[in-house]
Amino acid sequence: MNKWYEEAGADNDVVLFSKARIARNLSDTPFKTRMSGDIKRNTAKKLYACIKNSELAGDFEIVDLSGASSAKAASYAERQIISPEFAKEKGAFLTTADESVSIMLCEEDHIRITSFASGFNFESAYKKADKVDDIFLSNMPIAFDEKLGFLTASPVNLGTGLKLSAGLHLPAVKENNEIGKITSLVGKLGFTLRPIYNDNGAFYMLTNQVSLGITEKAAAENIKSVTSQIIMQERNLRATMKNSEYWEDKLYRSLGTLKMARRLNFGEFISLASDVRLGIALAYFDIDINKITKLIQTLADGNVISSQQSEENPELVSKLRAQIIRNNLN
Image (cartoon, rainbow, N blue to C red; front, side):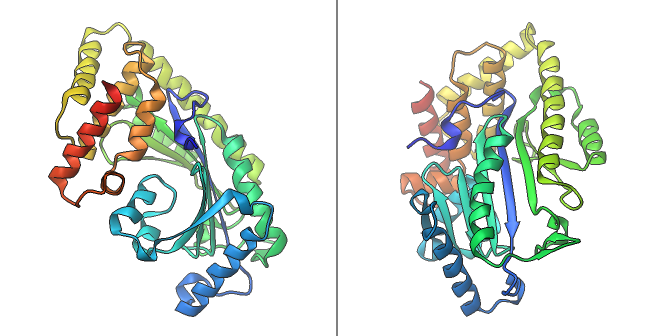
């Protein structure tokens, strides 16, 4: 089965993915910070049983990381199936075969549902998460207050418990030094815009910060509106780069490096992949953009180590990464 990030999504020249995350807690169980080991295990078993006894039983498989290597655990976090903190704890989670929906059991909250849709498609991402949420709401005692809404471990998630995010590729905005302005503007509207891979490439995550005093529908409409405005600005700025000899040369050089390099660390790869995605969007390269997106999702160190059954050796990992890229692009 193909993974969600292998699918063609709407506006995928700018939007890599749409993401929904729902936090829920049980009303009859202490928050994780006050859980004993036995309570945590029993809670995870109850939550797992809730899904296995539901209509969604066939959609999910459980992954127990307690016996997994650090690289294997990290690989799930790199693909955003679980959080980096949860990977270090090596807890248990549920995931669909296409990795578009996952459920962390007893992470910061008792239940953390995360769902993805390729491209600009918040409706699909939210619908998948909401379907799982309905199972828990119908069968488990979920903590809820009439004034505060759903109760969460962190006050910032009170209310809907819903966070919506868009993974954005904004090379033209970054090149024109507009990232700071957009970050400030969306901040005033209740959103954050942060780099996904530090300073490597031009990939950013837009996320809503308001979950109290707002409906889930309104949250979705708000982030759709903001995302649409950013898409428009990015494309307008890209148009000025189209006939530039400087950019044509730079982007072809980046593609050449990806096709020929014998060693690439992940940061180098992300920067080059960002250039190649831009080159595809500007019609310089006849390459499937989803192929580049898949490489971005699957070539961080933990994924390379676990998929190639290699050692945790930076030189070896860089060599294997370059080899995988050459095999995919040549």
